Length: 141
Image (cartoon, rainbow, N blue to C red; front, side):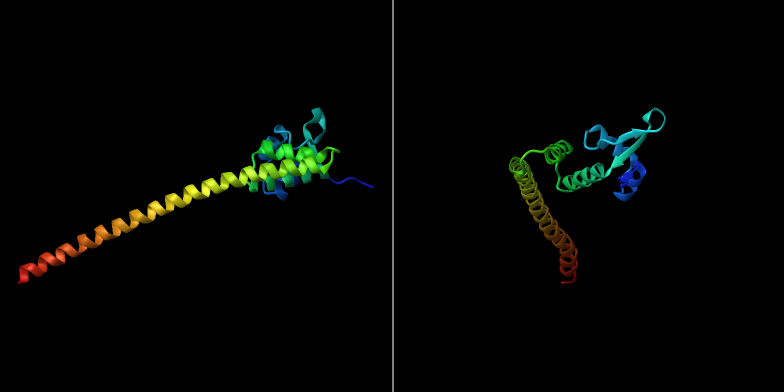
């Protein structure tokens, strides 16, 4: 039975990445392709690498750092019990959720401040636009 393998271009195209990004993930230890060809210049990715890439991109979408992603993904590669792995994953997710909630509160405060400034600017503009009409009416009297 033949094992499915992928080139760097195959995976880059499938996941809409650049080959440079793929090499970066390799440098970060997230991918470990085999090497082939003259001087080992060609990267040959396994189904395991493809899965690790998919998990890495999912972790990035969640806002996790690449080192956090690698730590979690490496735990699933090991033959250890899944309990500690899930606890670590939950701890990282809780920390990330807390960060997002703080960011959301900051954004809400900024949005509220923008709304106050908009209201003040509209009131000033309304007074400015009304002033010439008042002067014109006074002259007619």
